[in-house]
Image (cartoon, rainbow, N blue to C red; front, top):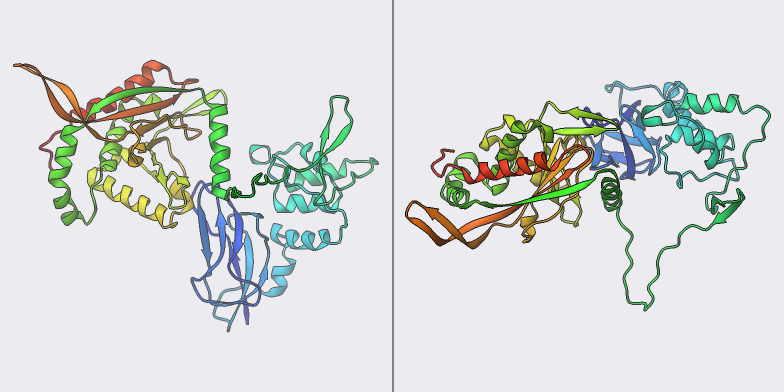
Length: 440
């Protein structure tokens, strides 16, 4: 027999950790090679972690809702024979790693009768830090008061150990039970107990009350944070896309036969947006505190609706370097994988500007919310046949044209009306100047 350490795989350059959402296998279950063992989630995408070997699951090192860093061991699989390079059981249990310490402190924490509940904190704490705090009887308020030296001010293992050393003779804070009421401080400085918010109940007994799923909670959080962060302002412009509609109708069958891909309007619009961003690099920026980051690459996010009603934004990397064929392949691939839940965490990272097609649902235009930390998002309205004044050398006349609205939301902290308006106007100009004789 040999022991194999199943580690959290690398999921992209910008993804450093994930949350365990569901174990698909239990201890003692047989696992086939490449079979999914557990489900994980980053802040935007749900994924499965497959096994690299066949064997039996003998140990699970993280619980549901625990945050795991890339490269950490999450489970131990026992394999037949010695053909698999594996870590002996003794080494797994004695190596001085965060995983081993987590396993040890979890067992020790079970012996603590009054276990503090850190789920009410607005701060992130790793499983190791939380378990050390539980062991030492550190309350939530006490833990929140520790100054962190980790990424984004997070409390690290060294931070909490240093704090424990300097607590001196002060009595350890009494840990609150898991189901304890959340403490609040009144204006007089006296603590009062605030009962946790109960789930709403139906007054008439007929209303259905459903808790938000994990992704909807994240979307809700991000949307509120974006409105609180950016000074949203919008510019609208109507565009004549008659030439584009006629051209696409003429070439779409040939395109699909030759490339094996459908030619929708989305890659056409994405190509034009990428071109306009090269003209106005001031829209391809991000804000970090008092600093503006000018992004070198143009990575276009395309908002995609999921079957369950949620929304996700996969990213087309280096969109300005793709021709229309390449853009169509990228758009179709990301859209298909979004609908089937096959996106990888890195597929949603690194966007510098976002496009959302509200016209898909019949909306004429919309006022989209900026995808932080970007500074702009463009909404594409529905294409409609409308009567329009057509100017010719022989005079003006009324005709039927295909038109749509573009709605540009941008962050007024760093993008003024001149830039925001000029950018969306340039997009419109490129669309209206589309060559009806263009070769694919």
